[in-house]
Length: 283
Image 1 (cartoon, helix red, strand yellow):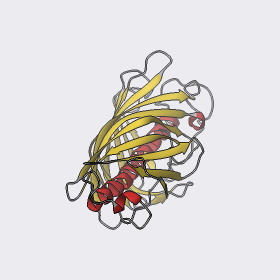
Image 2: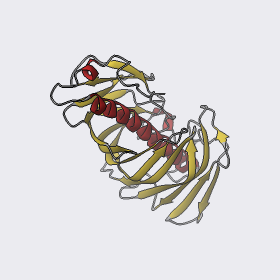
Image 3: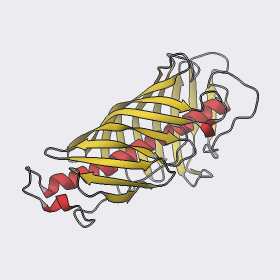
């Protein structure tokens, strides 16, 4: 849940990309429209998740750069440098809670090629790595590569002993793509840091395991629920989720998104009811 650049899934077009399930309009009550809705909402979910990961990367980098992550070990912080030309303002300087404003202005392109504009506002109750601390993220005219992000993300530190973890809750999430299409999303994820916790100023060795569920709804009110069936793996050094599976539940079918075997690439697959998987790009 560290830096990871925006990963944008390609949009699926009806049955042209070879889903055999699309042809079975009378099998188990499935219809072509239902299958198409599941494929489209699966893509929308991937985009929403990656925009959330991107916002978290920005938050973590700002916290680390400004000594708000917890302990203050000696040394320069090692990050992806994704803040780019953003202006970071923190008040008050001494005590908590802190108000953090990360302003990308009218447009700012980071070294990773991601262009952001607008503001992320954060209310941080205590050091990021302190058990029980919370961070509430909201968005003000905020866009990433033309995608507008809205809603509230609440991080709660659930760490115990040497196990570093956070609960991430998304409420009233809304994504609007550059063409004006929008979708809503909400859910709760449990995030556990499985590597890199001993080097809090080095974000580049961090690896996270993610479980939980999500709901995504299109502008026509059609919804799909999803559950992580095999924990997702998110490495800071990878631009995308590199491992794990998500199951989306349709009315009479389900889809499984498979992110691969851990390799840092932009490839995933999706299959309907255990059928032949079709490859798609995460960005």
